[in-house]
Image (cartoon, rainbow, N blue to C red; front, side, top):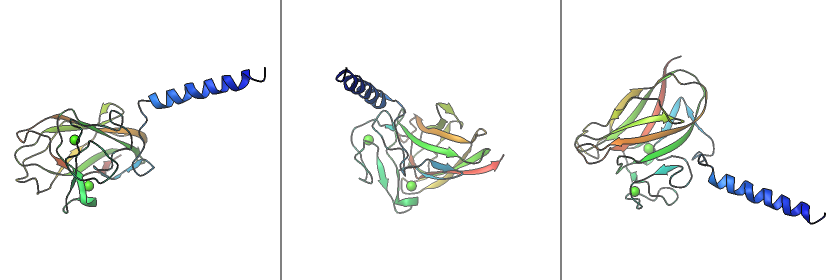
Length: 190
Ligand SMILES: [Ca+2]
Ligand SMILES: [Ca+2]
């Protein structure tokens, strides 16, 4: 009897460990707590977690800066950006996840500084797999070095914690989507 109990406990622990590792939602907020909405979310602060869970990137290499842990996501260092960094070299079918918390329900405008030489591509924002914005197009800002503010309205958002996914949709004339500095959620009504 005495030996059976530990064996079953170990078996239970082993099964739990497998479940935890296999959890497809196992990414964690960059700062340790969900990014607040209303508020500003740096594009370079997507969740911590492995490829396929916290992000998906078209190629292995980080073409930009080693700003955070080793990653395939392409981080651009730029003096004109909030927090000195943004994301760049974005391509169709890539995505990034941000754990967010809506603290005030309502409809929001998302303000996003973006840059693209030639017309950029399209992307959209999702909460738990549902689109919260229309398809957003990054315009030709004249240069990769020139950020321009674009904005987009959301659907009404309810209070709660969500997995916000930025989904890159179609490449533009630039052959990519475009550079993004941050996502600032400003409430427009309730
Ligand atoms: Ca990459
Ligand atoms: Ca930024």
